[in-house]
Amino acid sequence: MSAVRTPREVLLNRVAVVAVFVALFIMLAPIYWIASTSFKPRNLATTVPPTILFEPTVAPYVKTFVKRSQLRGPVEEEVYEAAPWWEQLVLDGGEKVVRSPSGEVKPSGYGQRFMNSLIVAVVSTIFAVSMGTLTAYGFSRFKVAGKDDWLFFILSTRMLPPVVVAIPMFLMYRVVGLNDTHLGLIILYTAFNLSFSVWIMKGFIDEIPREYEEAALVDGYTRMQAFFKIVLPEAMTGIAATAVFCFITAWNEYAFALIMTNRNAQTAPPFIPSQIGSGLPDWTVIAASTVLFLIPVAIFTFLLRNHLLRGMSFGAIRK
Image (cartoon, rainbow, N blue to C red):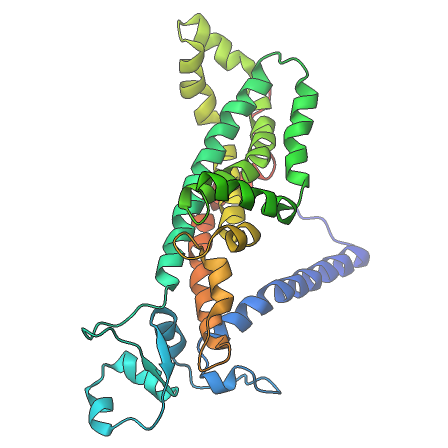
């Protein structure tokens, strides 16, 4: 038989529901606005008051991936009719698709930057989580001289804003030839995420009972075998949660990518704001690029959502 709630409890429950909806609106409103802008015609992107109802178009997504220039005059009807549908959308916006002398469409560069972001974020996340897990295991299971000081030193590297060390890193990278390279960004992002990975994984490994490993060692396992067959599976929730946070940090990083790269290894964050239309920033293309940039993080987080939710409480394994 359910207990009868008091008027105060009912009121608090309703206030909590209202607070949740308000917070949800505040968090989702920017995402909705970016998504809606990505489907607007360019002339409606900056109207005052904002245009809410409009006929959606995929022209911004088409223009995201092709290089274009401003039309100097009207397009001949025969040329317009012969153009594919996606090119007609660009022509309707007062621009034309830039082609090479052989007639091939020139890409805008967004695709390459997107792939650069994917490569750098995935590889740096793998390195940061792998090294962080091994380091956390060492601090958790072995007596290390000055353990607390070392852990604080590792954490202190996260306290320094990236922009403070960007210029010294740029000068060092220029000397060793790592400027505008994937390897350079991977090293930076790995080092930046390593402290976070060590501290988070140490919390998870501390909660795994030592008796599991001791039993495995008695059965003839080596320390390394016990780590891979006992500790690692038990810590998988923590690894997944740590990977999500490291991936998001590397995926969204802007300062290092802006200063350390120019063309070859430039990632999407510094490239998206530079989307230029007919002499001015094309906010619809910027919005479309941003929506596409959000998709991998959303998919990765969704796939690991169960691990992430459990991982927020540092696991459920206790002695």
